[in-house]
Image 1: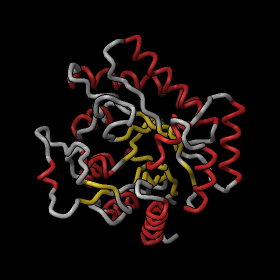
Image 2 (image 1 turned 60 degrees about the horizontal axis):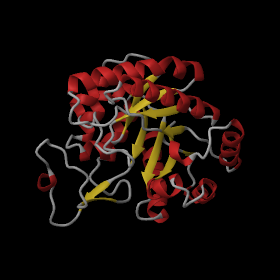
Image 3 (image 1 turned 90 degrees about the vertical axis):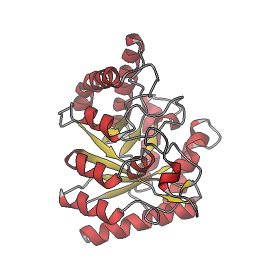
Length: 294
């Protein structure tokens, strides 16, 4: 059975930088009535066992769990010593995920540095992810790579933003401890067809980020397309309630259910407030009922 969690995109910087307390968000999230809370790694003030136990206990006391950890490693750094540090930090976050009771820890490819060729960057990313998998197996955590746009704290967009590069990485790593975190909105921003991307990775999907985008009046996707085929992150392609934008959630759910998907779908929303976030959760619940009867 599909399970629903939430990540507060609206407050990622506020919680990360201490303007909002993590425990305040945990308390607020109760009104969403979802089963889990996804955390972003920068939300955590410490990786000390006592602190992590307190975070986990607070979430679980409210009837939820922490299923997914949102982390952003950078595996395309040219310096091999720095890449080794990035591997170590990803492994530490896998361990933190396990201590919080989580099942899935996100990974990324890294930044699309202009000086890094696609072939070389792909090699580095595959090597780095492979180096993290023994820790994932040991901790009982699945490492999931997201088709991402750009982490808030990165200079460049995601190296594997485009479908072709993303698939080149995914298809080279065959492990039961590694899979895909699918994000249809990020596929849109990449200039790719979200459903076509899902079809290409469907057997590998373990988790999903659910948000939606809609175009401001008088704008078309072609108006926003850049020379490389991506859309950038334009102001005219804005966040809204999940299910009311450009993503075809009927097609998405039909495909997920066709392969017996029973993982977590996390609302990555709230840019326009908690009311829209709650509406997004309710929409996902309605789709779950339609396709799974519960």
